[in-house]
Every structure is written in structure tokens, then in C-alpha cells.
Amino acid sequence: GENVEQHPSTLSVQEGDSAVIKCTYSDSASNYFPWYKQELGKRPQLIIDIRSNVGEKKDQRIAVTLNKTAKHFSLHITETQPEDSAVYFCAASKGNNRLAFGKGNQVVVIP
Amino acid sequence: DGGITQSPKYLFRKEGQNVTLSCEQNLNHDAMYWYRQDPGQGLRLIYYSQIVNDFQKGDIAEGYSVSREKKESFPLTVTSAQKNPTAFYLCASSLTGGSNTEAFFGQGTRLTVV
Image 1 (spheres, one colour):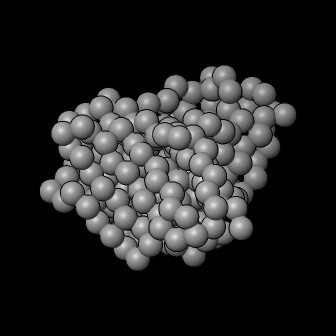
Image 2: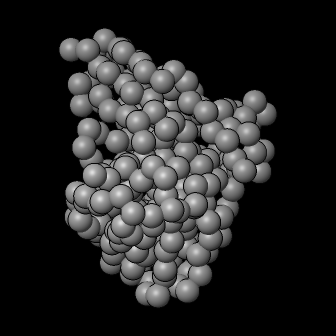
């Protein structure tokens, strides 16, 4: 099955700086790559996703890039704010709606 | 709130007992999922269902059972065969039809074996 890995496991950034989280996947047939944010004590919520026919997607301060050749995709958060502190999960699937999640990254934004 | 509801929020079980976690959605989604979340382990898929009366095992199905008698409901039973059941359980749902779409999560049930 699909194996998704996230790096680093914990990331601390100064408020206003950028944060980048990278994920790698193993199955070249995967074609959908969402990112979920889980705040402490809350449910995971989708923040951005990308499909394999696109290399980059932006939504305000967040962006996701996809490198199909290298089988990795990254989440970029610019101008980080304290409310960006959370656990971020990447995932991958290949048309069957069965998402394989990474282990999550704890992002801490230092005011 | 989000259209997908899990109950109860907290659940305590004695060793050797089966327990059932509820998940209901009013989003008219065909697909439903159960994940287990442990610290440092991410979200691991237990079971999923793409349509009523059909479901498939995920990566860690041993010790769990599900049913999908109605589109809106996908209850998860944690049986006594599950060796380490204490965890946070998340239910999710999504549209299906062969195209990947956003999964909506419930607020979770924290199960503790006492």
C-alpha cells in the first residue's frame, strides 16, 4: 500500500517567518494530495489540496507544491501567525478515496 | 457542526468488553471511514465503506468490526480481541464516485480501557 512520510516531525518558527513541511509518498499512481490541520483538541480540517495534473497551488498564505518525479509534495506557510500553531498531516490517495496519512508535523509559531 | 457527529466524546471500557462507537453524517456522503490516532502515529485507517452494505478492511482492522446498514451511519465496534484499544478514534466521510474529494472528520471519541 501507499506509504507517506513527513519531515520534520516538529518545526518551530518565529512569527512572521515561513514554514515548510515536506512529505514523500511511495506509490507513483497516487494522484491526490491533501493537507489537513489539526488544532489541539479539535478535528482535522482540510486546508489545501493538489491533484497530480498541477504542480503548485496557492490559497492566501498557504501553498502546496508537487514534484511527481521525485514523489514529494510540500506545504508552505508564509508570514506565520500564532494561530498557525497546530499539527499538520499530509495524505495521498489514488482515486479510490482511501487516504494514506503521514504521521503529522507539530508546527509551533513563537510570538 | 460539520455534518458528521461522533458519540460519545469520551468512553471508558473494562478489559474484555466490546464497545461500539457511533458515527452519523447528514452530508449525503457515500464513503465513510474510521481512523485511529495515537501520539506520533498519525491517522491509521481501520475500516472504510464506499457504499451501503459494503466495507473493506484498512491497515489495522484486527480487533475491530463495522456495519453499514444505512448511508448515514457507520458504527465501529472495538472488540475484546483488540489488544491495545486505548486511543482517539476519528470518523470521516467524503463524496465518492472515483474522484478524490475532501474528507470531513467528526470530533472524535477518546476510548480508555480501565
